Image (cartoon, rainbow, N blue to C red; front, side):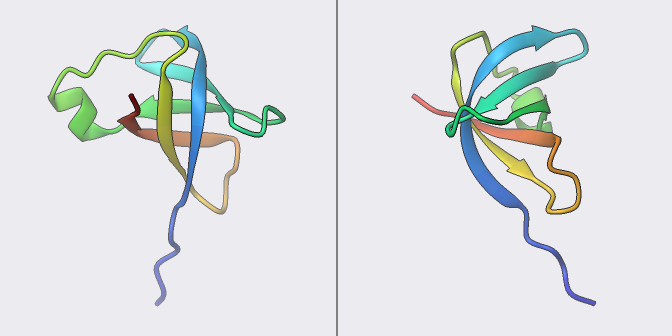
Length: 73
């Protein structure tokens, strides 16, 4: 079995939703995805607000959902 590699992209948080969910606009400004915080960010209490630049991972199977893995400076 081969393991599918996640797609890594960068984007900007547009909306903060309840339950640690976020709407993230990708850098090409044409797509918006629903993203949640990865486990390490939750464990270390990383706070995210509107306008933060983030790195996300997406599955090649569902391009509407993502996981936030890193907050960029």
